[in-house]
Amino acid sequence: MRIRSMFCLSVIVIGQIPYASGATTTSVSVSAQIIGGCTINGAVPASGGAVGSFGTLDFGSAISLSCTPGITVMMSLDDGQHPLNGSRAMMRNGGTERVTYSLYRDSSYSIALLPGTPFTLDTSHSPAPLDSPVYGRATPDGTTPPGQYSDIVTVTIQW
Image (cartoon, rainbow, N blue to C red):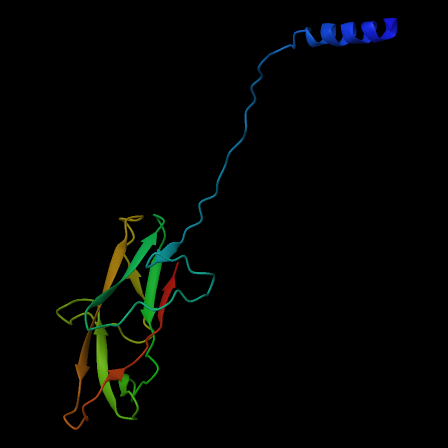
């Protein structure tokens, strides 16, 4: 019985010992490397990967970019899926007839976007979104049958 009493007394006494408290501080090194790049229409492209469709060019649209400041950004457009005699062309859905068209950087159709010819984009206002307008003008020859015509042009952004 005496051993039991000693054990209970020991547990009670140990429970009453105050714990030491304190505080310590340390420093943590934080660093980051910002790599120049762009997002295209809000998406971050994988290296060499596609971002997706920019939508239908109803002959007046824009490609929106956000880039880190201080990088040189080049953009080019290919000749599309249905080129005809060195020009871009849209093909009639369900047919083989084509309508040639041209793409431009301005609404007055004076700055042509020639297939495969890169041009520099002004990123001095980055990271604010940069809209690069694309305008189109179709040139049907008068013998083109009615119907829906379309083409897909690949846009390449390099930095």
